[in-house]
Amino acid sequence: MRKEDVVKGYLPATIVAGERGEAFAPSNIALCKYWGKRNRELNLPINASLSVSLAHLGSKTCITESPDGVDRVILNGEEQAGDSKFARKVVDFISLFRGDLKQAVQVETENNIPTAAGLASSASGFAALMLAVDHFYDLKLAPQHLSAFARMGSGSASRSIFNGFVEWQMGNREDGMDSFAVPLDRDWADLRIGLVKVATAEKKVDSRAGMQRTVESAHLYQSWPLQAAADLEKLHIAIEQQDFMLLGETAEQNALSMHATMIASWPPLLYWQPESVAAMHKIWDLRAQGLQVYFTMDAGPNLKLLFLEQDSADLISAFPELEIVTPFATT
Ligand code: DP6
Image 1 (cartoon, rainbow, N blue to C red):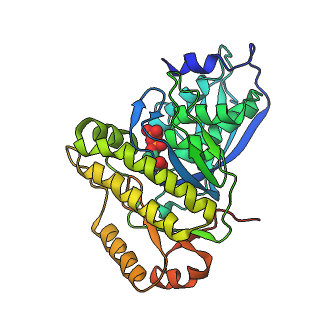
Image 2: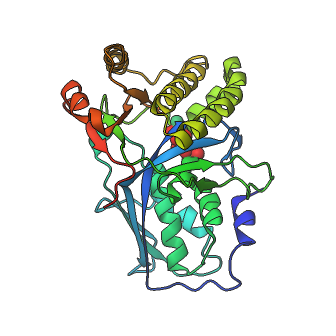
């Protein structure tokens, strides 16, 4: 099934462009990871995942009519070449929604995620783009449809439609329309996320290619859906009971289990740098000394720390460069 065929059924009969469609979406960090697809065209996952959104850190996107009839994509103030990978992904995504409308658009995106944090921006990028498209063409899509369509741009973008804790349900329909994220009705005011930068160089194998390689070549991957399902249950309990140790242990084990499947792929996928391993040991040492800190990692060398507000000062002295995010900030 093609993306455009799925989307078509949810659009108004006539698409009309507005003057301006603007939206912000936060980045997110998965505590139970999405790793592996059952359908690559629609980005349908093999397992459900759960994340926490990063509040004010994310992408802001604005769509207007193009001044000269040519689709234009501007990223952080710089116009991208029309045939660049980034511009093509953005324009192809918009084309899913503009139907027969011939009008060209100008898309301006700003990421405020500190580049030093080495965080991927495809999640917040596609979520913000989906929300901006919804405004610009006045589609009035329901939240679960916004999430399902953002997922077609990038799987993790399905979760960035919402704030706070978010679960992406895997669904089982062929068209994927039951594979969308839902926000959990729970917050955690003193939860903190610390971004530890190890390296910012562009990774050689992105998540998309990495997960495909793992699914196709790692026998160990067979155990992943079971691990993820068990972790998801534990995370729900941890969030419900505000049990930080259970949250941290589960997220760390989940991330390491995902990395184990990557390492067991062929050719092997090891996203860690020596500095990543050094940071892991440092965290385990701090924990042995009684500090409650855990880590998670995505398809890259950087670590994201999980800790509570009361331990912020200790963490800053251990990691002076730490960028701290308050996911449930009230202001
Ligand atoms: C390790 O959402 O970037 O960060 O669907 O191919 O665009 P595509 O992949 P993407 O993968 C994210 C993988 C991860 C784990 C996670 O965020 O759940």
